[in-house]
Length: 338
Image (cartoon, rainbow, N blue to C red; front, side, top):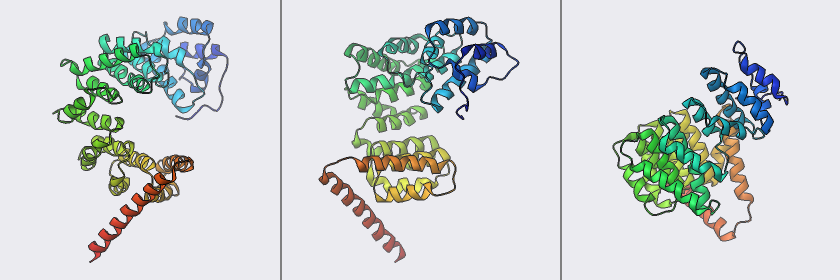
């Protein structure tokens, strides 16, 4: 969504508008509830409990969109309050809105939602949200006690036969960040599952795992008839930097599904190399209002890593790999012409 041109600092107009159900909610006014102080939160709570559910749902979603559009917006205090809302959709928005909050104090509430919330959508959001704490634990930025609790809750969710796939799938993806024993087996088992959603999440998890031994498996799904699978497969190829798949990723820039095209651009930004840079440059200079800025971002990522002071031997190896791929492709083209 568009970032509001004007940001209000006084919360009273925002609270007044929240109460006035005949007036559409204004993102600019709602932005005043960023970085709420304790006294302001009390005033907000008094207003919030009087609102009908549809009004609460719309407001909560707008705050999520505002936070995504503007990194300076801080609705964390607001979202934490909304975690206790009676409506499941509002609770989901609250969990989603806290996606950048790395406060360890959130781990236990999220586990509570995952274990006992009556709505599957909330449990799924909690399972997904715990993923960042699993990743933090991999970098020793989360205490072992909380890390163990998060892992155990996610493992238990995956073992629960009564839990639907929409909840088990994000639990699997969150666990895939972990290097602990058993995670690789879980990914393999999910990939062999008869449940399409679990297979898609298995591919997504392989990409998150940083285990390049999955390259062949994820590459095999680049030709899947399911666009969801192609999307996760090309993204995983990028995350694992499977450079041998550069030709196939380039082809996917013309995929019939727009989301797959977008994922292919992101993958090229991670894989890098001359051919990826050339393709991204062409897209960035084209007229596509959606893909051009994404290609610019991918090029910026490539430039960032090019500017790093990497050992010369690594740079040489990368250049040789690019040259080898381009040479092989040239030979293939000559054979085709013959």
